Length: 231
Image (cartoon, rainbow, N blue to C red; front, side):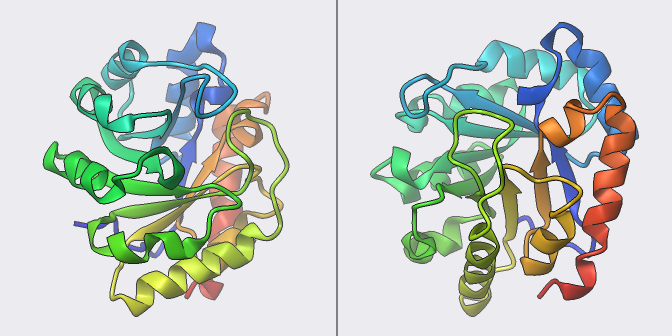
C-alpha cells in the first residue's frame, strides 16, 4: 500500500549531516522537534562518489529511534542488500532507477519483505522512467541535487519535476507520496510542498544548526505554509 499524500508535510532529517559521535542525542533532538522519519543515506563509493554507513549502523539506529527509518540506497546491485537492511530495521527503502535494470523486481522484493518501496530519480533522470512501475511504488524520491554529498544547493528545476511526477501519479490513480532530497531548507520548503512533495529530507538545514530540535520545528512550520498550494 502506498504512502499516501498527507495533509501535512513530513520532515525526514538526514543523519548524513549529523554528528556521528553523538548520534543518539541528535536523533532525540529532531524527534522532539517534530521529525516524522529518520533518513539514512547509504553510499557505496561506486554508484556515488562517497562511502557512508551500512547495515550495522541501521540496526543500531533502530534501537534508539522512535520514528521509522527511511533508508535511501545509493548503491550498485541493491537487490543483494535489501533484505539485510529491512531485517536491520528499515521501514522504507528506496533504490535508484539508474542502479538496477530490474526495477519492478526490486520494488516487489522490498514490499515482499514488509517495507515501503520507493524509486529514486536523479536530476537528469526523466520522470517518465517510472510509468511502468507506478503500481509497485509506495513513494517516489526526487533528487534535487546530484547524490553523493550533503550541503549542496537545491536545483531550481526540481520544482517542475515534482509537479510532473505528481501529475503522472495522479493520472495513474496513485496516491503515492513524493519525497524530495537535496538542498531543502526553510527558504524553499513551502515551494516544494506546494509543488507536490510531502516528505522533505533535510540534512545541513537541520544538523548544521546549533539547535537541531528548533531547526526541525522551524522547517516543519515553513513547509506547512505550502500546504494550501499542494495539488
